Length: 193
Image (tube, rainbow, N blue to C red):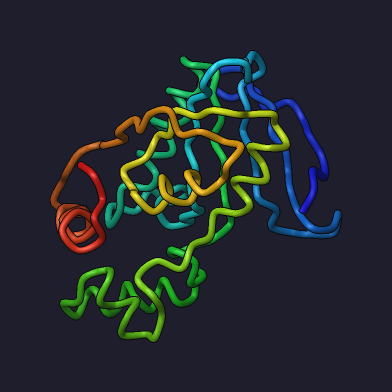
């Protein structure tokens, strides 16, 4: 993997640049870093590692908290001159087609974890080596990690040259559409709320 291209990304939250990372320049779905233009890597940087969720991030699905988490992460990254790393690993790493299959299983009464397991996948198949590569490329040595997921904390903690200084909670609230999903993440997957 390497840095392929960088461009200015003026968004309502603030002045960012977007950097695409891929193994080759023809990659159609690169991992992304949305980096505040005034980032200071000599200090601990607020970092959100966000895995793609087309249904939540793009269409505003009420089944999950992904879209609101991404919005809040961008707002906080603007405020604190941080980074949002956007990894292309839809559906906890099982892809969009399989994620939609899990939606059908959830409609039949399974929770999000049991649906993944029923289809023969692990509960969470995501990998974070790309995020570590991106942080190294940006020169980030210490992070304030914006997450509820202990797997992300553990993955970053394994990188000897990047220190997780603090976990910053990212909770955007319960509503009728996401309550069961969030309770499953908390009670079965160890997420920290």
